[in-house]
Length: 389
Image (cartoon, rainbow, N blue to C red; front, side, top):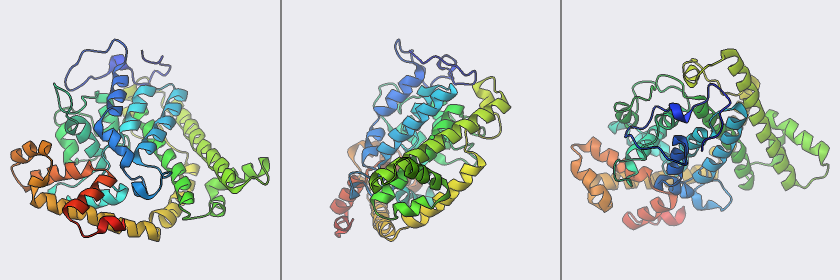
C-alpha cells in the first residue's frame, strides 16, 4: 500500500478530494499510485518516446526525448519528496504527466501552434495536458480521460504556480466542471515536480549540447555555477580524460541543484510551519524553490544555453523546417477535415463552428510524434521537406 507519511503537510491518499467520476478504491494501490499507473499506461505517455526535447527525435540515439526527460524528472522528484517526507506517489504522478501536452518538435512546435491558434483561443501545453488526461484518452468504459484525482490534476495544471484568468480554454472547460482552485499554489508535491523539471533539463541540456558539439567542456568550466564542480573533479582526479571529466562535473552540478532545493525548502517549511497540505497551497509563494544565489547563477547558464544551443544555427534551421511541417498540416486538416482519422470523425460532426474545428485539428496535431508528423507531411503535402529534416 502507500508509503508511510512523515510530514504533516504531505498529501494523504485517504484525504484526497477524489475523482470527477467516483470509483471504488483499489485493494492494493493508493489513489495516487493508480493515477501514476494510469499515466504510464496512457497512449500520450508512450508517444513521448518520439517527441523532441531540444533536438528532433531522429537526430541522434543519445539525445533526450520527452519520455526520457519525464523519467529523469520523476527520478529527481521521488528523491526530493522522500527526503522532505512528502507523498512520493503523487509527486511521481505529476512529474510523469507534466509534459503530456507538448506537441511534436519541442518548443518549436509549441510556438507554431500558439501562433496558428491565436484566432481560436490559443494553445498552452499545460492546459493541453489537462485536456489529454480528462478528455482525449478514450479507453475506459465509464468516462473519457483517465479520471485522475483532484490532487494530480491540480498538480498538472498549476505546478508552475497559480494560473491567472482568463484561463486557457482547454483548462477553463474542465475547471468549470471540477474546480482545481487555480488561483492558489499547488501542493508541495507538485512544486517538487516543477523544480525537478528545472533540475533535469538544466542538467541534461548540457549533456546534449556537448554531444552535439555546440559548445566545449572548457566553456562550461568557466560558467559560475559549474566552475567549482570542474575544479573539484580536477583536484580529485587529475588527468582524467575529457569524457569522464565532464560527466563527473555535471554529476556534481546535478547534486548541487538538488541539495540547494532541499536546503531552501527546509528553511521555507520551518518558517511557514504548515499544518496541512492546504497550508502550503495558501502560503502565497512557492515553498519548493532555489536559493537566490543558485537562481542567479542558473540565469547565467540559461542565457548561455539560449544563445549557444537553443538558437544555434543548425537548431534554428531545423526549427524553420519543422515549423513549416506544423503550418502545412494545420492548414490542410482545417481545410479538409475528412483527412482526419476515423476516430476523429464524430468530433468533427459535432463541431458547430470553425473554432471548434480548429481545436479538433489542434488536438490531433499536438498528439503527433515528430516522426509521424514528418511522415504525414510527406504523404499528404509532399515537396520533399521530410528528406531535408
